[in-house]
Structures are given as structure tokens and as C-alpha cells.
Length: 225
Image (cartoon, rainbow, N blue to C red):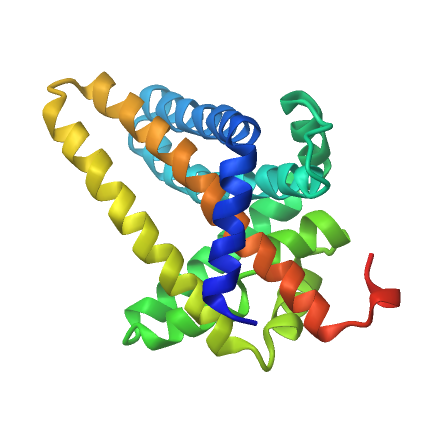
């Protein structure tokens, strides 16, 4: 598996289906952002803490929705509406939330201990969300499944992560410049929602296509769902 080839295919799919993927990302990210804001307003410092947890879980909700959307457009067209896409995610919300929080905590602790452990965990857990959404794995099974798929291809998967981060840095620089030009908290909020809505589908594409590549490398066609 070549990281550059995966990123190239992700870009091609992004260009072909951005009209469908970006609205899905926008709806989910806006809902998560409003939930975080509401918690802070209603509950004060406790709401801020809960909002941080909701934001972490929300990243996995967002990726879960985009995994479904990407699976939908793999045949070249979008058959599911935004509402239908979110309906596919709803039964897996609890699993996504718990897996997301556990993964986030583990990776953050890993980064505290000299960064390398965090990068290692991020690599072996990269395809947790596709395992949950496309294979119906539970929390423990999703971690095990992701590690199983990545085994033997860790450097290639890490390469996808590095290239994804470089793309995000470049895009965030552009949106950061726009944000500094807007002297308004609401304007900054809007720019943040837009930037996340634009970048999240590409990240999800790169990581979901990595999942499909790993399955193709690890399993004969007869075993694939």
C-alpha cells in the first residue's frame, strides 16, 4: 500500500463528490458545535468539561457519518440523503462515543510520553471507525480489528497520517489568515465550522480508503463484507 496513491484517490473522490460530502460534514459539525456551546452556557465550568468530551466524541460521530457517505458514493453516485446517512449512524452512536473517548485518551497519554507512543497508537487505531460503521464491530472488537488490519503495514498507514496532517496544516493556515481578518467571535465560529466542513471529508476519505486498502491486502475477496 502506497500512502501517496491513497491520498491521490482520496483527492479524486473529494473532487467528484464534495457537493455531497461537505454538507454531511457541515450538518454534523454544526450540531456538535452548538451542543458544546449550549453546554457551556447552561452549565458553566461543568458544561465546558462536558463540551470538551462532546467535541472529542463528535469527531468520531463526524467520521462515522462520513464513512457511511463515502461507502455510499463508492459506486460513483450518492444514493443516501443527509438524513438517511445520519440515520445509519444513530444506532452506532454509543459505540462511536465510547471508542472515540477511549482512543482519544489513550493517544493523548501516548503523546505526553515522548510523542512516539501516541503516534504508534494513532497508527494502529486509525481504522476503528470504519470497523464500527462497516463491519458492526463493538468497542473492543473495533480496536482489535483495526490493529489486525494495520499489522504489517504500519509504515504505510503512518505515511497516510503524515500526508493528511500536512494537508490539514496548509488548509488551516489559509483559514487562520481569514479568521484573523474577521474581528468577530461569531465570524470566527462560522469560519471554524466552514474549515472543518471542508477538511473533514478529505481526512475521512484518506482514512476510509486506507481501511479498504488494508482489507484488500489482508483478506481474499470471498471474506470481505
